Image 1 (cartoon, rainbow, N blue to C red):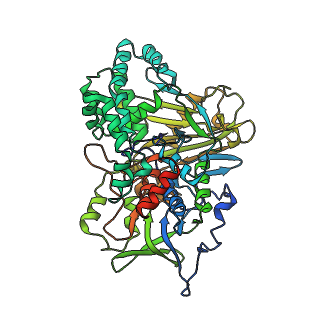
Image 2 (cartoon, helix red, strand yellow; image 1 turned 90 degrees about the horizontal axis):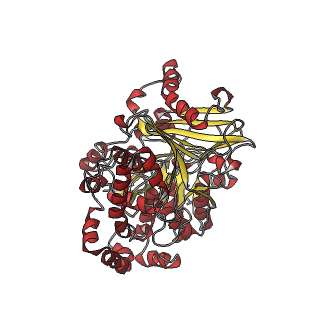
Image 3 (tube, helix red, strand yellow; image 1 turned 45 degrees about the vertical axis):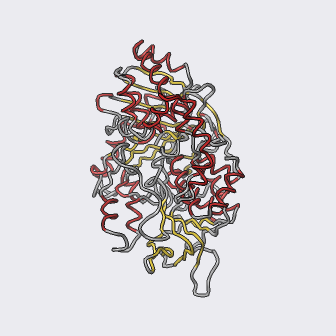
Length: 579
């Protein structure tokens, strides 16, 4: 959601969505890099190998160029597979795509990253994929963000000691004691949560070789290091984090609220719905000596650019403005896709959908899946949608020491998952001035996965009612921006001002009900695997294991790619990048 940390194999964080139209706001934008469209002809046809029948084909066809789809496609190309990634949008990247208006380069999704430059077994899954592709991602580093809470406004720093000072001032000695107690209990468990590199996982029995046997010594070492008590605690890694909090008898309201906020920003659920493994990994990343946060120097779009470079470097292809209308089933198997323009693209080995579970259903013919599977998808709970505010404005009158990130919580009693209650703000031009014209700032504010689709359902986007609702529901973001930027900021002086709604998500991101993703809570359900009842049809992205989040969807794409190649090739790749 807001955070994009490096998770354990079973954890989740942000999102990878498949888009259509020209941008989140339906502006016609020039591509960030011209290479992004060299595989897309003017009529959307795919200029890959043609058969005599006029049909195109590839070993694997990937639907959607979100982070998950690009990681899957790029790794398959790295493995030597003939792969094509199809994208409805004229920009790649899904919800992580960037767009430009009047010289302002906006992030549409992920905004806070950690571990992008990490390497080795405990690295961010996205970093592991980039390492496998031989791609680097220059980043700026920082260690703080501003928070605006009912208790007061303060600069929150990550690291082992600085947060204690904030607790002492805003919550009192009891909060400090409980925080120390929490860290003492969970940090020893982090070695178990980080033991298996996500890139080692595959969706078949080959995982016994690439993961279980390969990393058994390090797993055993981790459990020995933790001792009997720690090893017993490790059994809670796949349980809700609230169970650990309750077992420690943590009662301070600030501590409970702060943990709920971190959990919600991490995975879209509070502490009673997030896996303990995910939270423990985050604590280990944020509260160790020397830890930092990262932001790509060229914006979140640079992540997409790096993946596209890797895809094309190894012979993979990206076709933009190629809207998949149907997944084609023959003799019970997925054999390709049909585009909106009527072109059929045959998949010799597999079709991989990076769309959500609900949107993938829409691509399949009636009766292709068992009723039990369809019912399972249709009854899976959904997160709510988003409100977005993108602004471009003059930096005159704005503090020179402005932080890149700001979090506003209006009322703890309403809960961090209540609509219009939490606003996240990113001003990436603070660290990357190249994202805005000279002397200007670019800003993205949003209400994260809390905007009810029901308020917007059925509205005509051209109607006065829709425009009035946009104005009303965006006001909380405007107020948060004014609070964060101070009196030097004036709404009327914004050179670019765009508001996105759940209908924007539904229409241009091809998301069922504009949803953020599945609302699957730890202890009550698990994210689906990557196979489907239809042979040769697999899925990756935020509707599959490990779940929601940039690192999570990167891991899902890697798992699918690994599953489509022999164990020997998978092992060779792990050896090549030192895992």
